[in-house]
Image (tube, rainbow, N blue to C red; front, side, top):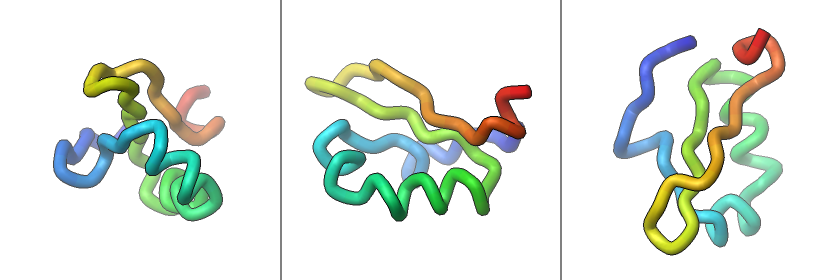
Length: 53
């Protein structure tokens, strides 16, 4: 797994909802996880299946 870039790899749940398709494409191409926040707190991590394995 590639290291997390704080400025690029953390996004709010509302941003994820608005740009889900683009975010999924970015996760596949960058091979980096995305941290999704809700009310300012990390609640989930999105990563490609290949990186998860």
